[in-house]
Amino acid sequence: QVQLVESGGGLVQAGGSLRLSCAASGSIFSINAMGWYRQAPGKQRELVATITNRGMPNYADSVQGRLTIFRDNAKNRVYLQMNSLKPEETAVYYCNADKVSTPRSIMDYWGKGTLVTVSS
Image (tube, rainbow, N blue to C red; front, side, top):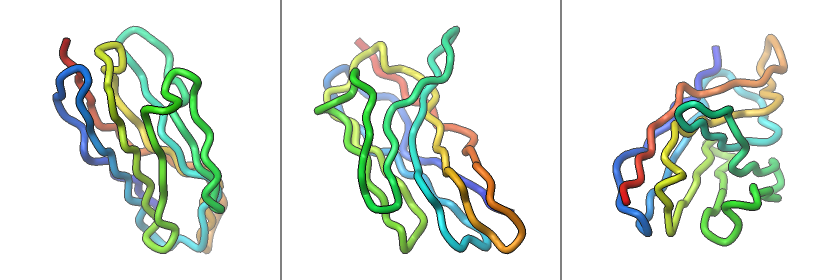
């Protein structure tokens, strides 16, 4: 059984920084892409950033230059460094692992999310 566990969320003032972490555990052979998505109250879940297993990042236009995604393949971890945060970025942030290969399957997985609150 594969689990994704996020950490690092919390309350921060506008303009501040947070670093989110996500750890994938289980009998994992490999993970294709990993990423972060967020869902604000009353809105749909949206892409924040993804990163391939070769380290190539992709960002939503709204976060370019302020958020940085990076990963540690050996530890099956992905991180999101968030700087210059804005109140409208208050949301639950979810970790995603794409095409996780285990002895039994190749599937996508989601974490349960971590809440980020940006106060004005």
